[in-house]
Image 1: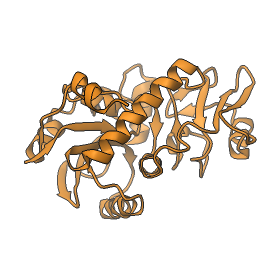
Image 2 (image 1 turned 180 degrees about the vertical axis):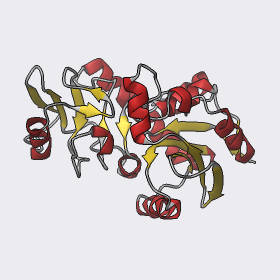
Image 3 (image 1 turned 180 degrees about the horizontal axis):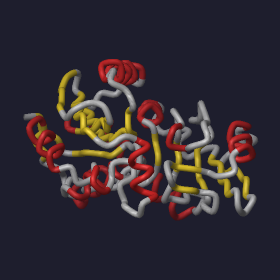
Image 4 (image 1 turned 90 degrees about the vertical axis):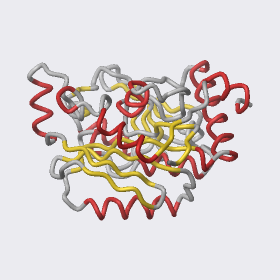
Length: 272
């Protein structure tokens, strides 16, 4: 088995750190915890040493008519302005964020369909308002520790990602896209990706230092109905809960020996 001393969640959203926490393999908070990040955005920020991860941060609240930009000398990205104007609701799956303050990095935006869940690129600080100095400083410290570990202990480090529901049977193309991104952004550590699929049965494959675990879940429309019916089964939760995936955790343990450093050890050795 491959020895791993550090494991970091990198998205897509909160069920990634939840999974690590539920299986007692989350010893350290990372830069991508408790937000919404696509995998390419995570790779890009790792590759560029997080140079613009905390820059050009846009804060919007449709209900309160708030549109501001922080840590920037730029204007707000027109795509964000248009997105707010043209949509009556600010949706993430069945959730309505119209009364929520959204904190998002405008440097990682491509297509902006009406539902945030379907954005192909997104860098959103869902539960961390980095416009507050104390929280900004906390994320900076997490970044410094992450970079130090990534620089010095790459081969004992693993990135962990849980996808959105992939509505495709062409898993080979998705894998190829990940391999290409890994090469493009020079990602040298191990990667675990749990692929939530509504069309493929459970299986796994490990190659090119990436462990792909396919997990069968209900389709997008079913999970929307489940949520509206009062259950918590949204995007891999409830009856499709990814964060408590015992089967997936056991697969991970077949490939990796998770001999993780403690929080105290990490702070004493890698905090700057």
